[in-house]
Structure formats: structure tokens, C-alpha cells
Amino acid sequence: MDIRTVGVIGAGTMGHGIAQVFAQAGFTVRLVDLEAAMLERARAAIARSLGKFVDKGTVSAVDRDQTLSRLSMATSLDYLADVDYVVEAIVEQVAAKQTLLGKLDRIARADTILASNTSSISITTLGAATARPDRVLGMHFMNPVQLMPLVELIRGQATSPTSMRAAHELCARLGKAAVEAEDFPGFIANRILMPMINEAIYAVMEGVGTREAIDTVMKVGMNHPMGPLALADFIGLDVCLAIMNVLHDGLGDSKYRPCPLLRRMVAAGQLGRKSGQGFYPY
Image (cartoon, rainbow, N blue to C red; front, side):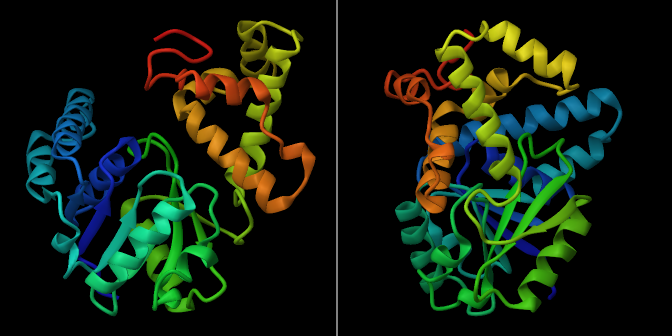
């Protein structure tokens, strides 16, 4: 497929990161969010990110300016009517994503592929909300998108080989390493990562060790770049809880039960870096 124009929906941390990497790779990018303020914050965040690359000498000032020129923004989904490929990066909730994809299905061209950046939700379920399930797939970027080279590609029950090939080719053009995962709750990355984070939270709740001790064991003893509690704060405790709920509901195994402390912290608005307080203050 000749993909040149890419739409990205959701201007949060993942959305603006996805928009940036596509624009850096030479694509024309249209970033859509219902809130104009979110789009302005996204534009500023992308400019800061590119500025850091310029300071490090990995991106030239000319490339930075060209990247920004390829990026435009709007608050209406109608802006995506003629794009070649769409990546949605909205809240990790089944109903919200189904509603969005249903709307996109009516707006976008019939040959446009609709990809979801979901980190855990069934692609088959999302594809069923459209009349083009053969053109719906999972494209799960890692955070921060600008730095992490991995993308999980998930094939739904009806996703066509042609759509998957197009996604693989896009990842190559982005300079990303694509790994295919089957359509099971959590896919590969979060099926493994989130239970570890959840168990670390249980260890805090049960007094097995302090937050610092738990993170130090995993960093120094297991050579992880971040401890699981600091990583949970970075991801967002609300996102961690949403993924654990998907794992628990989808797999029906008690080992995926979200830790009560995680539930309490989310209920209290202690979501990690985004709220200024999680397992650590920010």
C-alpha cells in the first residue's frame, strides 16, 4: 500500500509521540483530539522533544523544522476522511475505542487501515465494531515512543495478511522493530510486564520491602533500567489498573487480580507522574 498520510487520534503522551515519529519518518501527519488545549500541549511537547534531539546532534535543525511542517492538528474526526492509515491512541477502555472505531469506519476511506495502540484490549473485539475488520489491527508502541524501538503488531481474527504486511512495512519505515503477538489479553509485553508490576505492589502492601528496596532489587539485581514501582508511576497507575482488569477479566485467572493497593491509589487520584504523586512524589 502507498501510505503517505497518517492520522493519529489522541494527543496525550502516546498519541503525540506516535505523531512525532511518523512525521520524522517523512509522513504527512494529522493529529486529532477533541480538546484544543491538548493539541497545543502536544505541539509544545513535540517541539521540545525535537529540540532535545537537535541539542544532542541526532537531528538537524532543518530536519526538525521539516518534521514540524508535516504535522497538522484538528479537533474533528472529519479531518481524517482522506488519510491512508489511522492510529488511535485514546483512553484504554473497550467501549470508548469501539465507539471511536465505529465513527472512523463511517468517515475514513474504505481502503484505510485502522490501527489501535491498545496495550491489552482484544483487536477482534475492536474490529467487530467496524464493517472492515480485515483492516483493523493492533499497533502497540512502547513509551516513550520517540526512543523505544519496539512495536507489537496484533492480528485480530479477521485481520487480513495485506493489512499486517502494511503495518510491518510502516514499522520498517519508522525504524522500529516489529514483533507479532496473538490476540490474547495483554498480548506479549503486558502479559509479562503488568503481573510483575502488580506483584511489586503486593510486596509494598504486605510490607515485604520498601518501595526503594523493591525497585533497587530489580534494577541492581535484575539489571532493569527502572524499578517496577517507578515504572508504574511512569506508565500511570490508572493505565496499569486498566490493563490488569483486562487480564483478569479476559483470562479468568486469580493470579491477574489487581492488587487492592493499586485500586486504592487510583481511586485516590494518585496516578504517578501525571498527577504528581504515585509510589513516589513528583
